[in-house]
View 1 (cartoon, one colour):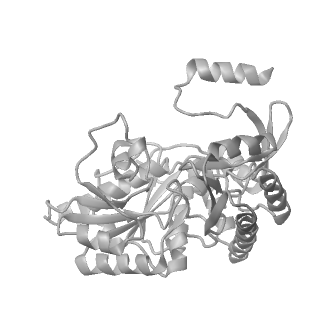
View 2 (tube, rainbow, N blue to C red):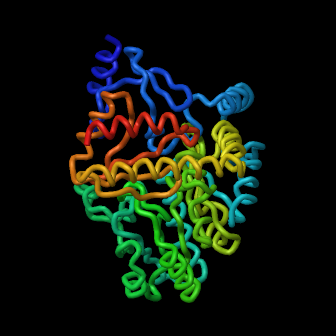
View 3 (cartoon, helix red, strand yellow):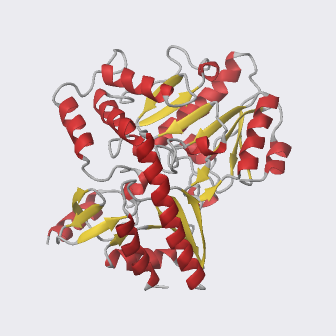
Amino acid sequence: MIVNSIVKKTDDFIFQTYMRQGKAFVKGEGVFLWDEDGKKYTDFLAGIAVCGLGHCHPGITEAICRQASTLIHVSNLFYSMPQADLAKALCEKSFADRVFFSNSGAEANEAAIKLARRYFQKKGEKNRFRIITMLQSFHGRTMATLTATGQDKIKDGFYPMLEGFSYVEFNNFDALKKELDDSVCAVMLEPVQGEGGVIPADEAYLKAVRNLCDETGTLLIFDEIQSGMGRCGTLFAHEQYGVTPDIMTLAKALGNGLPIGAMLATAQAATGFDFGSHGSTFGGTPLATAAALEVLKIISDPSFLAQVQKTGDYFAQKLAGLAQKHKSVVGVRGKGLLLGLEIEKDAAKYVGQMLEKGFIINGIQDKVLRFVPPLIIEEKEIDCLIDALDSLF
């Protein structure tokens, strides 16, 4: 069987760092995937919030093919039109004035961390280097972003962490205010914690954080790698709070499957970088930026975002119905199509059972089922998922 060959090659030659679920997918279209045996699955994971427009979207596929037949890579020693167009579009649709392109979310966050520190060191404030992040946060797996992440379990075996990071409880303004002193250069947080359990920021909290940063001259970094690009029903999740950061990071759905990340900043914050201070060989290639530009055009359309919000509300209501019906379901939380269903325990068990029923979902923190489907998911597919979950509780 094909799957046996794929599994054996993978297990024989690839580092065993992922707990794979025993399926090899060979085809994708829209919100569906097919395995090697021809079985069809409805995808409510979207490559972990990456394929926001679904699999093999015709517009994205055409943009990739067109650019691949023209120019794939030239390096950042030269200019390219797709990169320039994407940077301009991102700035026009956000608070930002400058963009730095990377290959991933971790690299975008790494760039944000470096920018925040260098911004103050260029001004002669060399003792202002600490960054406060949130408990249960997730910012990546490079050494700096791993250090920034507020989850001890993923740091195991990699100590010592880098110095200059501290952690406070998310949505606890008093804890943040107590920790923030004149050695802090930045506060870094996710408007909606994804890996931490799908936990949205409270509106009053986020506004208070912004005010505190303004009062102290501290940079505010929003990690929108999972919550951005339409996932929460607005282009960026922070738009729903009426709060803007000084620095924002994007990745995941920006390329709809092609690796690309971006670090956006205000003109003032961007002064922390100058020639030679940071770089990336593959950051913002013509191929990746051409795809991302098409993604941005589609997702940023107001009618598209309105549909995401409508579908997200419908999905949340259906999940809430399960919570009312079953004692083992604690509740639902999230924004738009970034939703979590908290259960008593054994999230992994339900993930496996749903896979057998033809639905791809994700379990996090042992007791949360996370749903991040393609943004083009429809109510009929949601209804089928709800029926399947209902039969398991």
